[in-house]
Image 1 (spheres, one colour):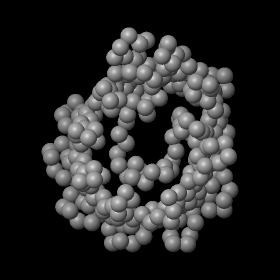
Image 2 (cartoon, rainbow, N blue to C red):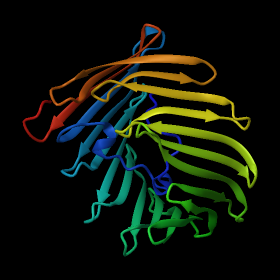
Image 3 (cartoon, rainbow, N blue to C red):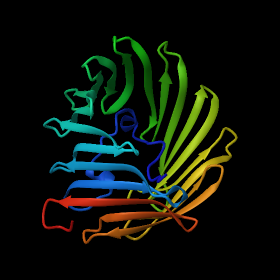
Image 4 (tube, rainbow, N blue to C red):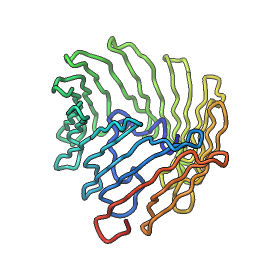
Length: 297
């Protein structure tokens, strides 16, 4: 698995909402308006289709739609993204070949902060909701509700400093389930380090995850330790001068080292990425890009 993003993110609000892909998240340069991506793996040397992803972007680089076809049965699903006049996500709608599967509706307060997310079934029945409350620019808590508006759980945030906060997760009886403490630091190389401490009770340390990012925001290292502070698994990434992943080392019981090669167009976007492990091709991802101008395609 290609790991270039953290398990723990310092932005608490981004952790709590569905991921909204933007053009930058695909590591694209220039005015790309559409992307088609195919991924194949090679178990036993046999090419195996994993997915086809078709993505379109609007003029601001926001995703308009994403069509994903997966597996040997080529199961197809479509996700439509709709935005308000402030370019904030307003609705996400998912479709399958049977029709609309579900949707999420986003509401904002007068400060343009996310106030509520409501998830609906394909029959427009409310399945669950999350309500967000703030103090100024700080998120204080999230109330999770079932479809009948009863409490399903609560997440509270407590801030010690601009670079440290605590996230506490409660069940539907407001009993603490677990908590996480996030601390962010910048080192002498101007790399950003995020420490995530996980507690299963008020004073019972369970694990820690440390993520490190370079000056371009790319993940260079992830280390996870257990309650005894010994390393359980880790990931290290090395990038080339263009910022493309060149080498990745993953340890999770066993050490696996992968190298990546890329074919790029004149705009600097990669069109083909090959993953090689122990001298064998393990994965190939190809891309076809559409540009809004006379840039390379």
